[in-house]
View 1: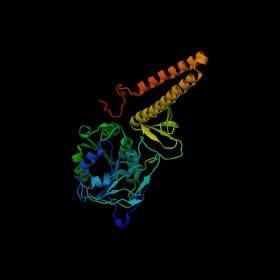
View 2: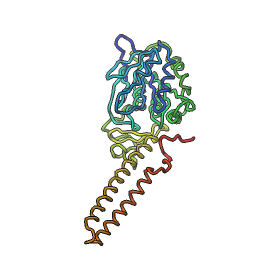
View 3: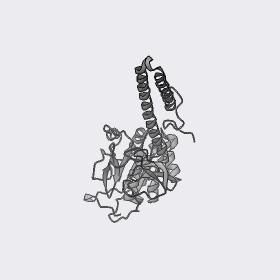
Length: 341
């Protein structure tokens, strides 16, 4: 892949991709406020945000740094000394000196996905890519960090002990084996300034190719088929291995690492249980109405319908118990509970 020279020769020397989730706003503020105003690199940020509404992250971060912070836009030119923030419900993609926004399949149950940003960053910038993984739940960003490492780039991870939610940094560290730097959030900005250094990206620099940087494709995934189905679309899943990272992907492009698969599969099971509960409670009401209509004239038939209604009610109670709506302890895989390691 060949990097296109930016108009006016103003190409960034390096491109930094930063990913965060739960607890990430505080970490991002601590990173950007330590960045120098003459940073010769472009920074792209993905923070997991709800798909509805509008992200205000750019305006928040802009209060803490002299660097311009803008919402990323389609076909936007990457310039040094600027920070680009992914909008809600769009993947942020780095191409040949530009940004693209994509509403393709969710990865790890989210859009924008940190993995998408970092994987495309690795494909576009190779050894001039820098991946930064900050506070967040689950493991989005781990596969992307591996892609950056494999492309010859640099991986920086927030110290899990410094992160509000340590799962994303821990997962990234497990995936890459050993990061180039593991730092507190307030030390990452100065470290990035040292890593970037002076200089611009040369026009004829050739980058390391990364296979299929986007999961969105009609092709069958390369890997063995798994016995599982996609929680989003119920299609078959294929099992993909990228170093220590295991991912599951369906044909249309929904992709999950193991942490995300646990949660998304659990959400699908919960949705099915709620549907079953609604069907059973509706059946209880219907059978009771039929029983009441028979009355004393057909007592035996009335009793049969009452018994069937009671059986359905008991099944509904079991599902309510399984759903934890009566004060039971949360499930051991509750995503809001940190797992001790």
